[in-house]
Structure formats: structure tokens, C-alpha cells
Image (cartoon, rainbow, N blue to C red; front, side, top):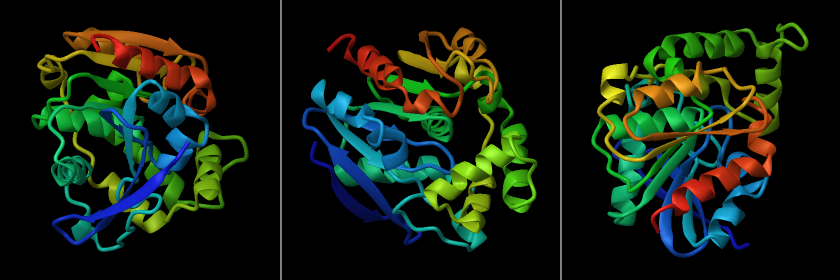
Length: 252
């Protein structure tokens, strides 16, 4: 599988990286917090699976993650900037007809894009529940605690595990704290207005962001797709990529 790396610059002069593989229908995939495109989509074969299915898989590293710039100035972290960055990427690539998916923070960013008028053919929100969209402060508080107390978390605790993952991806704690300030809640009323097909893909043991079933119930055209694992382990299992592929191939 051939992977190419590209960059573009946002309106506030932040250099955003994205990786591509495959040819065919454009599919933008957004990774989770502390992660990057390589860890979320490439390393465990999801991108290759989707490329083989006929997708041009476009995988940006979100601002403050991966190969993208990691500014420390709070001015670079206004509300909803992650959604803004993806709109800029779509414009940069000249995309009009595409599919859109994201895991965890990536799924939250998909929701914010839809709330702001993005119109993919189909969307996938993975690793996310209703509470993780409608009450972002709870999850933001968890990660703020992780980042502001590095090295002091009880072994085996959720905070310890999050810090361990941060170490594997080489994340920048200052930049990542900035990301928490960009979160915007998406109300159940707003979600109920998402009138496009949305696949809700979530680990059967994953309630980190609330209930995926409750999220699917709020959306008018949602399909709940359980996959094995919890919030961390679901990403490394082939069923995640298979579920995304199978959902997006419907109607093509």
C-alpha cells in the first residue's frame, strides 16, 4: 500500500499534514485525541482495507497532533477550529462529493462539521456516545486532569492509561491542552436535525463518551454498529475498518 504525505496552510498559518492512500471515492477520516492518522488508520490496516474497497482515503493529522503544527499560543485554539481546519482541507482539495468519518475526537469533529453545514453522502461517527457530543466538558475535564498531572497518575487508572498512550504517540502536552479549549457542545436538538445516513460504530465495551445507542436513537437516520473492544482496543481490531467499509459501501 502506497501512502503519500501532503501539507497545506490554514488561514492562521498553521501547517496541517494529511496522508493519502487509494484511488476512487474520497473519504476523509479523522483520528482521535492524542493519536494521529498513522496510529488510528494506517498502523492496524483500516486505511488499506478501505483503499482496497475503492476509496481515496484522506487522513489529516489534526492540529496539535502527528505531523501537523503544534502551536502553544492560545490564539490558535478558538472554538471549533478542528472543524474549520477540515473545511479548509476540503476546499484545498476541491472536494464536493465525499464521505466523512472519525473516531473519538475525530467523531466529535465530524459532528461539529455536520452542525456547521457539511454535507457528505454518508458519515461515520465512531468511538462516540451522546454525552461525548452534548456535554464535552466531562471528557475535556478528564483529559485536562491527565495533562496537568503527568507522572503522578495511579498505575492502571484511566488517567495512567491515557498518559501511557500519549507517550507512545509523542504528543505535545501544551498543544494538546489547547485543543480542549476548542470543544463545542452539540445539543440533542441539533443532532436530531442531521438528515443524512450516519453510521455509529462503537466498541461493545466502550462507554468512555457515553452511550452510542443513545446517540443513534437521537439521530434521524442512524445505524448502530457494535464492534469488539473498548475505547482503546477497538481501534486495533480489524472489525473497526470492516464496519466502516461495509457501511460506506451501501448505495455505491
